[in-house]
Amino acid sequence: MLGKLDGDMTEQAWLENVQPADWENPVANGRYNLVVIGGGPAGLVCAAGAAGLGAKVALIERHRLGGDCLNVGCVPSKSVVRSGRAVAEIRRASSVGVVATGDVSVDFGAVMARMRQVRTTISYHDAASRFRELGVDLFFGNGRFVGPDAVEVANQTIRFRRAVIATGARPAIPPIPGLGEAGFFTNETIFDLTELPLRLVVIGAGAVGVELAQAFARLGSQVTLVDALPRVLGREDEAVSAVLERVLQQDGVTLCLGAQIERVWQDNGERFVQLTENGRQQIIATDAILVAAGRRPNVENLNLEAAGVAWNEHGVQVNDRLQTTNRRIFAAGDVALPYQFTHMADVAARLVLQNALFMGRKKMSAVHVPYVIFTDPEVAHIGLYPHEAAARGIAVDTFTTWLPETDRGRTDGLTEGFVSLYVQRGRDKIVGGTIVAPHAGEMIGELAVAMAAGVGLSKLTTVVHPYPTLAEAIRKTADAWNRTRLTPTVARLFGLWFRLTR
Image (cartoon, rainbow, N blue to C red; front, side, top):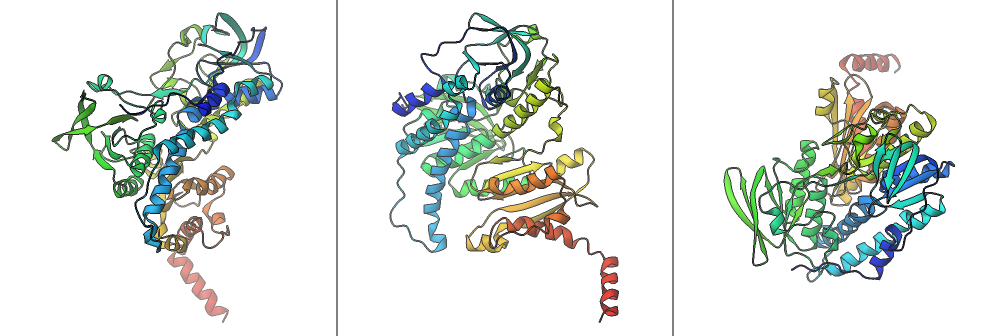
């Protein structure tokens, strides 16, 4: 049996912030300007923002403040990813002339202890006591609608003028025979480990699966990554998938793509996964299974019918202003949005505050939101991929600079990565962009600013970047577009001009 966390002082401090054992709910007092159901990133931004503006706010959370991101998502996963990257940096040091003697030793217990310390430190931002100090009435318990303008929690009825559903999402568990009986981890439980599983099967090659497969492989697990799709990161462009597949294999991850899992079972503490890949059946023995096969919105038990709020398997239905079918009620975050990222929840929450409290007309479709997959190299993207643009009837041209061809790429010994810009044909309008690079998440902001400000590639070519940096690849890619403007006709006119001005 793999060791799991039983609790320590760090854990106690974290829980005291996000789910105080001795918390006493306030007494509901009159009608609230805003009731927020869900204390994850979207809900917390809504509650803090509204209270800061002077609104009377009630916040309802059934479990832990901070949601997935703080407790079982972004914060713990990126802490573990960082430890894995440190191992990789040592192992490939010889490629830049540094010889590390001896084997790299990983103290998995220390890795997880550091993760918990980081989580505890960050949890002070989401602490129950902080929100009480902000003037928010915080209720712990299961909130459910009992009418179009009322919510019930812990035997109290709370009435509202406006409400926000921000209940997030949870791991989707595929209906694989024997999976439940054999036992498995999700992102909600994997960070409780104190012992490294020697063998790990990861089901799902999306962002979560790929990040953790790479991290655990670098920390010493023998990892097998399984997905029904024929490539990893199936939502991304094929060029992205190709890079990540090569990198994962270099890190020792075994890829089983286009595979169907038929059944799972356990025998004497050992788990077995039977699957068919390309018509060939195989059985994989493993110590642990991590399920990372997508997310399901938390809409059950909200009694949405009583509030007149429509929903389906994808979550709460909202319009472009994030308003539900009940005009008093809005929704934000993973429970309503297709792209489930913390910063997306933050953006949606700010939009909701304007629309719900001040009769705003802000539209989610007008927002350019980048996202990052925190593999090594990172994958950052904003806007549309070419195939998405084509589906909307937008013709685009793609311009790409490969990082190994840049000066900083050469000095850093990079063998993978690129910058691609997708430009509307015949114009300099940026439709989208993808960066696969170390710290691509820090680079994508330049494209986000350009797209938000309506700045085209003709302006981007004039931006001065420090030399040598990887960000120069953005300018080089813009330069590649700029050179296409030198058509034969323009070249002839230039030639005539220079002859006349000798």
